[in-house]
Image (cartoon, rainbow, N blue to C red; front, side, top):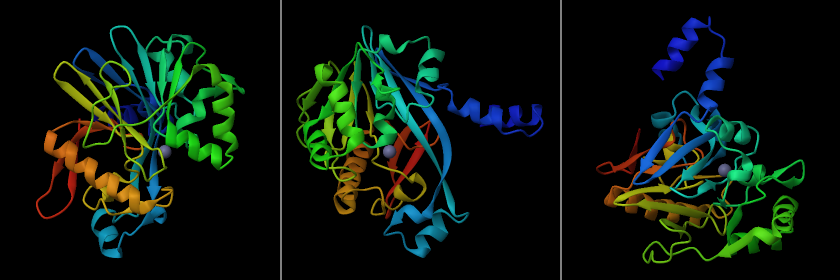
Length: 283
Ligand SMILES: [Zn+2]
């Protein structure tokens, strides 16, 4: 924030450079032997119109200015021998972001997908072609089945294009996390936002990070009030349930989290607030 402010003063109040800076993957987090990079495609302001179940009192208390910080993020996990993308954003700045950490799309070995909304799978195709020719693509079976049954063109294009690289998997239940997908990476069911919405627990040595996809869209209100859903949730009630159990889990186990719609740096800790919901402490 300080750097942005100085930059703003130096360049005479133009906002373009500030945007460019906040979109670049400046932030990284070590998780044991793994390194996790934030690949942000944008820092935005969200509107209270997307909220379901937020009372005027909650909004006045948490979002008095009427908008809240929001972002569009993907993450890269670098293990000693693999480059693993978690989601691909819209694909607008993804390739520039990868380049800025010295990576070409051909060097991506694995792409994990939290769910198949356009702002998460948009980068999988570039001009209608496979963007990651050497990557194994992982999508949860219930997520795949839902969008195929919906006859969703965007999802079906991706599934067809990646046919030879596609791996469908069953996420673990939170109470019974046993089957990793890859060494140190375990998918966990967090259904509701979409029917197969999956979060990924990253573990190396004793370190952990939960990359939680779209478990939240409006941190400002969904932390103190996890019962607030959004209009993008396919099943808002189930999304609330998933958010509540995962928040409890990461707070109790002190597992840092990273999210696709959390403002820069999009990584931090979750703490229980007495008599209320939770608080997010960014890195
Ligand atoms: Zn999203």
